[in-house]
Image (cartoon, rainbow, N blue to C red; front, side, top):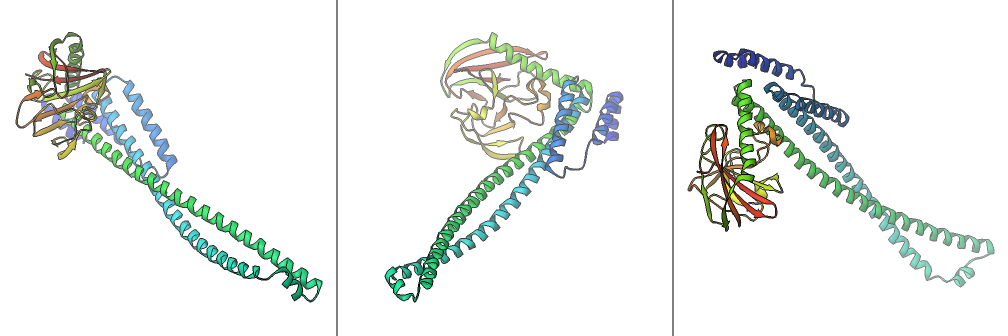
Length: 391
């Protein structure tokens, strides 16, 4: 790995930068440990990696420190995955053990029920014999006393048996309820494990994308960070300097997809669609209605959206970058490394339409030496939608 990095940088004269990155990568490899074997070991590893990530984030933002953060996040997610797998294994064993207990209790319940029924039948027969008959049938006082004692013992035995039956029924139900709870926990753990594994895949792709996009060069890394920050600052300035166009209704055309901001703040024609609620970045899919589209980042066709807004572009729609952690979001250091909107294109039309009613604003801002054009709609209630790179 180190040789490849240095070799790729030699033609550009960036040997020093590449050596720094190579040394960092090689040192990171030494951090890799055997997987934790139990919950306590996993908890210790998780705390250690969280501490290392925090320490690296406090350092100056350099390419080598960013690689260190990514590697330790990968190790951290790996430890969390192992911890979840251990919990799943333990929970599965508990479910199996509870199943055996339930089977045994069911057998005991059947036996006690049959026994009690037999005693009830016998007791019913005994009731047909009166106390006067017992006295007449007893040859002496000793025999009479023994019969009375026997009847008392039988009655006490019946009561104890009934109590045992009730206890067994209660225990049987408790074990069944506990098994159902454990099954629900197992399902939740399996969902969590799938999400953790997906996060791990994204983190590995992010690290590889970082090395590819920067070409392992510190100056290139800083340039990409600066360009991303410039786009963020353009949006911030737009809020205070936008000119009001007027009210718009859902479905009204408001702009055309463009490439404004190129080359510093855009790499090609697309719509960056962003939603803020009370000034906070929000996943636009929470507002957009369910829609069938192609996700180029995930390389699949899917249904996306859970809100009530129309989509701003016409079908067929293609998402080129998701909201949140993406292979390119490492450069958005101002947001904690998440992409704050959705990048999308339409294969049929460049027309951008208002997804919901509101007041439309327009502005143009400097972005890394280029001009980026921005539209935004104030929907009321603290909700504003943004449309970047428009023509």
